[in-house]
Amino acid sequence: LIFAEDALYGLLYIGSPFIFTTNLISAHAGIISRNAHAELHGSTYWMSNGVFYKYDGAVSEVPCSVLDYVFDRMDRNQRQKVVAGVNPSFDEIVWFYPSQTSSPGECDSYVAYNVLDGSWAIGSLDRTFWEDSEHYQYPVALGDGEIYYHEKGTNADGAALGEHIESGYFDLDDGDHYSFLRRLIPDFDMSSGSVDVTVKTKAYPRSTARTYGPYTVTSATEKIDLRARGRQINFRLDNAALDTDWRMDAMRGDVVPDG
Image (cartoon, rainbow, N blue to C red; front, side):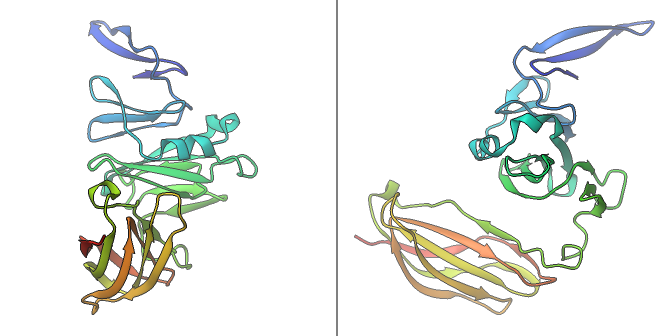
């Protein structure tokens, strides 16, 4: 594959001795920077101007649930600094990019894509180079003038990871009914520490959210009893403790229509 700013070409071997031809694959699937592409499981992924693409024999657009968030925040004047990396242990492609508040215009944010389940993640992290674990025991990245191992240990160079994950709002019958959440049944693989679970509800899409919790969940927690009511409900999981190791399975909720 040969990437251009506004197009994608393929270099195809056609015979001896070393004869190749160049074919136009797509006239619009250009790349945002020279390092904004990565390959995983036989497919190539790259960031273009305002869209993500995939090539697996044909070019297709990758649906992105955080597309506006990423490109509205990006400093387009520094787009040539975008760099992509692969995290094969988690089937992820990650792009590091400079935001409009970055100083001095270096990569300070990321967007990651899971190629198996199609999910996206966003966050802040200053990395300008990434080498996956194909060549090293762990992925290696460069940031702040330092070289870091990733996916190693349960802290961030001696500090707490401070991780969190938050769902979108969900409802019953497209919001035609209020939902009453009276119990949560957490399911965590937790070898150490705890996780805080927070529930938010809204009566209307534009109304102020009401917060329930946080409720602390440990390996001994069987259920959380609460009385949360609203048309829309979401969950947030937080942890700010050092060396906490946990993994979430299915979060079950006892939810019934309520008015």
